[in-house]
Length: 114
Length: 113
Image 1 (cartoon, rainbow over the protein chains, first blue to last red):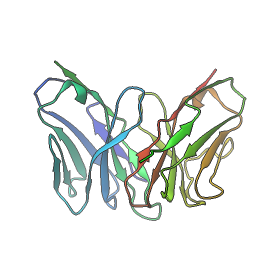
Image 2 (image 1 turned 90 degrees about the horizontal axis):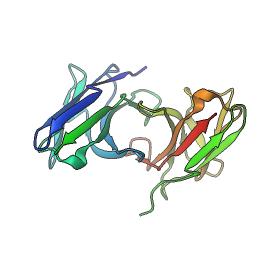
Image 3 (image 1 turned 90 degrees about the vertical axis):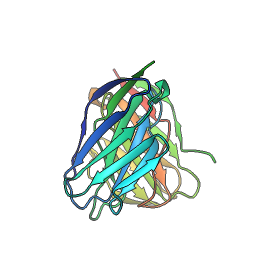
């Protein structure tokens, strides 16, 4: 089955710097890759996603890139702000019969220091 | 637009007791998911419904966990009997369909003593 690895597990940056979180997946049939932000004690919230027919997608300070050949995708946050501090999860949607299932990475705890 | 609703928000039980969680998805969302999120980990899918049918329950510990969505709207997840390792946040999510964005509810934090 699909396996999603996420690195790093923790990331600390200064306000204004960029942050990059990387994920790899194992199932080449996976075709959808969302990113979720989860603040302490709250629900995961979708912040950006990318489908396999696109190499890059940007939304203001957040961008996601996908390399299908290498089976990895990354989240880029520019001009980080303290409110970006949270745990970020990447996920991949399995291909095959179980459509819609998301396999999540273990998360990256991002701390943005003012 | 109302989001995914879950209750209770918190539950503390002793091992071997039973517990049930309730989820009301976003109106019109055909697909409903139950996830288990253990502290420090990503959510893990337990079961997925499409309307009132089960699409995937391969990771549901069926000897103690059960779930239903009888009328294709609300869903309940039950654990009977609970074990210490069941302590986690149980998240419900819904989407319009199988390939659509998933929206999460606030979760139920279960503590098994």
